[in-house]
Structure formats: structure tokens, C-alpha cells
Image (cartoon, rainbow, N blue to C red):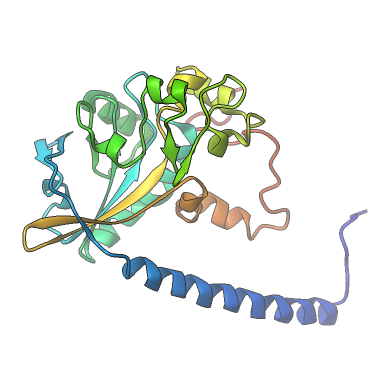
Length: 261
């Protein structure tokens, strides 16, 4: 017998209507936050970032692919990785199908990672994705936008991620925003990418937005850590399931790894 509260349809409807008011308030608040994002000042980008793409070497302006808006997902796939981060992979599963719709609304959505382009392309083929993916290997792009960090930054406590300074590296506490102060399954996840904790957490997830106007690229917005939760379509569904996220440890895998023991 269930231990969850049960009731009549009338009791359910009364509780649902009360919840509906809270949901509507959250929707209005979300609309207001979107408006405030769009009102942020634009920051001109003068640095000449270079990327490797399927079409060859590209500038940041080239990544717009003829559109005026660019959304870049900072996909955790460093040069030391053997496979992409499984969390980022689950997020990419969700946004892969949105690319064509956004492209027809003047928005280019693509991923950028520091792994060599050939590794990104091989992994993309394995996953069956079609979104554009660029390598920033050799560029300062990921570092300047706080999605990649050096081993020295880890050791001396110079990492600034999600607009906060992290403490110096320690085996039990590295990447507090990812590991819940050392209690999360970061080592388990790192192993699935073929790296150790230190190398894995030198890459971080995030989203950065840019606009191209009169030939000039401007940075408009960046978000990190739980700020990308809304992009993780899987969790939007789970949050509406009867038992919610109901997690203990890392339960998800890359979509081609289920039922493989």
C-alpha cells in the first residue's frame, strides 16, 4: 500500500488549483527574468578568437553562420578526455533537435569544447547528433568565458566559476559547485570520460550568448552550474513525474550505454 497522501478528486482539484497559482507566479517571474537578461549591457568582443569547425578555421563572427544571434553551450570535453561528459551529453540529447528551429528564428546554437575537432566529430557521430560543434583548442575562448581552467588555477585557488572564487584544489573538495562540497559522484563521472577528478573538473558546463550587429560581436549573457538546469530537458520531465528527480548517485548514462551492464 502506498505511503503517499491520498484523497478524493475534489481534494486533489483544490490542491491542484492552489499549486496552479504558484506555477503561474513562477511563469511570470521567469518572463521577468528573461526580460532582465535581454536588458543586460552588451560587451564588445575585440579579441580574435579562432576555432576549428567542420568548414575549417573560423572566427567568433563566423560561428554565427549568417545569423545575428549565437548561443554557445560550453560542452565539457577537454583535450585529455576520451569521451564527452555524460551530463553534457544528456543535455545535448535534448537540444540537438532544437537547432533547426532556432536557426529559422535568427539564432545559431552550437557547442564549443577544447578537445581536438576530430575527437568531437567522432563522438558526435557516435551519439547521432547533428548540431554544429567547434573546437577552441589553442584559443583563450574557454578560459576567458570561465568554462575551462588550468592546473595552476586549481592548485592556487584562482578558479572563478559561476561568478565565485573557488578554494585551492584538494582531492576531496575540488569543484564544489559540481561535487556538492566533495560529496558528489564526481570521480565516478570523471572515470567515464577517461580522466581523473582534476582533469575532468578543469572543464565546466555553461551557456554564453552573443549578438552580431554592424559587424561587431558583443557578449550579452553567460550562465553556469545550476543556471543550465533549464536546458536539461530530461529534468524538466522528471520534475513533473510523480516521484520527481528521485536520485541517489549518478543514475543516467550516455544514451548508447543503457542496458550494457
